[in-house]
Image 1 (cartoon, helix red, strand yellow):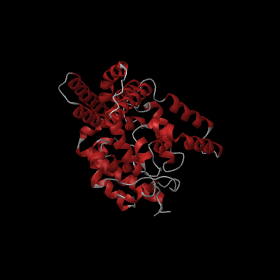
Image 2 (image 1 turned 180 degrees about the vertical axis):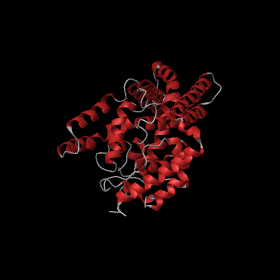
Image 3 (image 1 turned 45 degrees about the horizontal axis):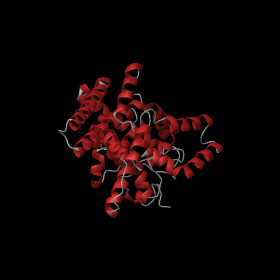
Image 4 (image 1 turned 120 degrees about the horizontal axis):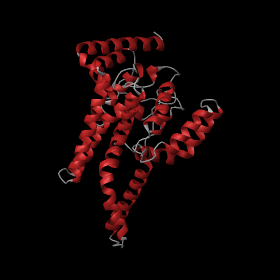
Amino acid sequence: MTHQEASRSIFKEIQIISKDIKAKYPILQNQDAIGMGILLTSSAMILLAMYGYLTGYVNVWVTMLWIAFWTSFLHELEHDLIHYLYFKKSPFWHNFMMLGVWIFRPMTVSPWYRRYLHLHHHKYSGTVSDLEERIVTNGEKWGLLRAFIMPDQILSVVLRSPWLYPEVRKMEKEGKFTQEEVKNIWRIVFSGFLPVGIPLHLMWYAFALCYLALGIDGLLGLNMAFPAEMFSFLAFSKPFIVLLVAPNLFRHFCLHFITSNLHYYGDVEKGNILEQTQILNVWWTFPFQLFCFNFGTTHAIHHFFVQETFYIRQLTAKKAVEVLKKHGVRHNDLGTFKRANRYHES
């Protein structure tokens, strides 16, 4: 069986599993209503945590973990929306949901901009032009740099620009990117995090540097006289860090750790979906999976059967994973960590 035949077979088998689930639970046919319900419920849970923190009823760690958990639902909704799985024929409600999934995840690129990157990812997954995965460190050798930049997409681009920028230019010259695609990339880089993402990132960097200075001062016993304005800034920015920045950076780390290591990079056969992803759900990944909605188990399913919502993938995962494994999709290939996510040993 060729990889094209295997992919078609996987699609048909998962489609049958999905139809069986929907037939068993007719409520799943109400796709738009379920999507909106998940958006409103997740948003309410996040607002509840924010209220609890600001009124002193909930401590910092519970607040951050709670918000990180519920924003993982919003990420999955955004992913579905990018594929037009909710309110496709109702632009107002579709865009309302697009805005809704972004409000509590302002450290991410605009979902309208991300749509371009993600659809390009599906078309060129595993290749050098798959910038969506490259940005979250797919294909990089493991080390302190990869771990450091993994949760922060802006740092990822800025610190790797000395080799990412020439790569994009080279791909443009080789015809792997059109001029219009390159314009889209720069548009995403320079305006995709506006209007809230850039200010929040800058606040976070300043906040972290202030605490780093305080830590060094305390450790070395320097007793430096820090300006009062610095402490005013820390007091002002702390709610933003606790409620918006830290939960999302933590969730990003969990998601990006899983996604960047379940996707292969660099030596994937063009058009061969079987080589694009693996099923990554070894037991010790559970803490990461908890904050990215079991992404390691279900994302490979999505590459073969794009038209399904994230919550139904959870219901079909057990049977669908067996279908993938039967057709040769890898399962817990931990060698990817040593191979910098290459599919082959060499």
